[in-house]
Image: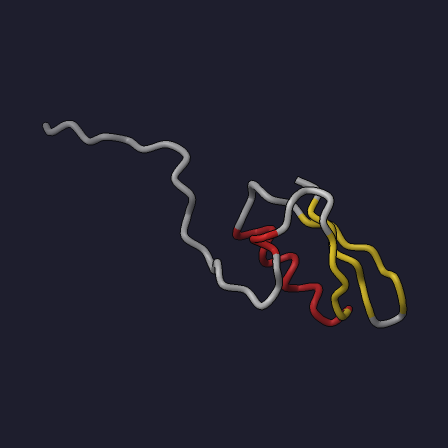
Amino acid sequence: MSTIKIDHDVPLPGRINSKYPFAEMKVGDSFVLQKTRVPAVSNWNKLHPKTKFITRKISSNSIRVWRSI
């Protein structure tokens, strides 16, 4: 039986290229997004569990997105 090295904390490849600035944001940064684009935030949160974004409605058709972790 051969010895296989187990690696820890290797991130699962995900969609890094996004038209939104999720990857460049630091905790506390925010931007405004059209309300219809909320699924992009949810998808990013699922693909990148070490980061977390939250949203709040700011008008009838837009939201603000914050990086919280």
